[in-house]
Image (cartoon, rainbow, N blue to C red; front, side, top):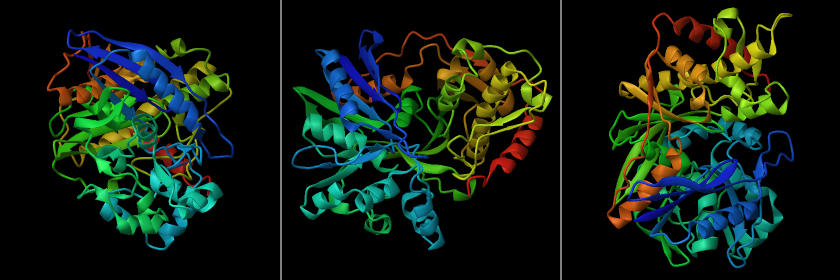
Amino acid sequence: MRIAAIDQGTTSTRLLLADSAGDIRIAHSVRHGQHYPNPGWVEHDPLELLRNVAACVTEAGQVDAIGLDNQGESCLAWDAASGEPLSPVIVWQDSRTRETLERLRADGAEQPTLARAGLPLDPYFSASKLGWIVANVPAARAALAAGRLRLGTTDSFFLDRLGGRFVTDATTASRTSLMNLATCTWDEELCRLFGVPIEALPPIGPTAGTVIATIGKVPLTASVVDQQAALYGHGCRKPGDAKITFGTGAFALALTGSRIVRSPETGLLPTVAWKIGGETTYAVDGGVYDAGAAVEWLGRIGLMKGVEELQSFAEPAAIDRDLVFVPALSGLACPHWDRSAAGLWLGLSADTTRELMLQSALEGIALATADVIGAMNGEVALGPTLSIDGGLSRSPYFTQFLADALQRRVVTQSFDELTGLGCAALAALALNGELPPPQDESSVLDGRPGKGSNWRSKFADAVSRCRGWRQ
């Protein structure tokens, strides 16, 4: 059995090949452009993404099945007849609809959105982006009038163009704010609320366990959001199992089984983990908008010369020297959900060095993540260890600081392509097969006594000072 998993992420598209003999490797990877046409706007070129996904299919060669994971909330419009995009991909980081959502909140729209979709009013999710496209893109309105408009997340665009099937899966639909979480169907009231024509949306299907589409002659047997793919790749299978992936953002998910956790006051989000064989498994989700994105920004402004500078730092911690960084470059997600918050360094002085600023940046990302896990642990009985992956998990300083801040055990994986692995493992289910786990050497870090509580209170003070800055 040989499986191709295509990981279409925020900054790149990657092909992972895995087989039943235990060979797992990245066979192709290509980055794509990030476009910022206005302040707060983040866009991708849909045809560039499509070319990159198609290139991964070609590079895969002869395989038994394909799995595809997607960015989640990023979405676009296209023409049903020609297949041509009618808008750019509006990326999950984009905040152009913030004022529209504030008006909806003032009109009392947040409560029905929480009750039906389980999600707060935030530009992060697809609904307001899709509504913006219908309201502001003339070509989309013309296609709607002609009965040719298709609206969807990036997965449905790829499946339509490459596999001839206009469809999405329950995990991706659960990130739109348009799906009723209990029934896994589009909600007419939510579509009306956000100005999204329900007839332009794709049918919602399963995540895995069946043939979803055929690309060339190869069955595509898994379609899933990247974070849920990573959850599966970490081996999370029972309630309380949890993982954190440090990519562009930092995303924590914990399985809740058949239970939908509704706790809007904590900022946690109920979501679909996967839908397989008619059975829906739920999870709870919390994220930090800027993790790897904050690290890339440090390099872009010249503060960081290379990621090797993030491996180790002198003690004590920067926060113990009263320098705090809040990574709210795109605002604050869980547990605050405040897009008006701004990035902040607090405690700068004449003797602050470049190295100390880098150290505090890593600590700020870790502490923002610890806030998410703190909220999650209050609602879900988390297991004794947290499994983490992604770029920042390769920094010994970051991972130990995170364990200290959390005061719990953190496990890192030497094999960190867990999103692609999870996608491949889900694709294998339709073939009645299982992929062997990678030959992995994990490291276990325990939180050191006496650390963490003072850091968390200092960080909370800094967070309170950065909120509302962009009002």
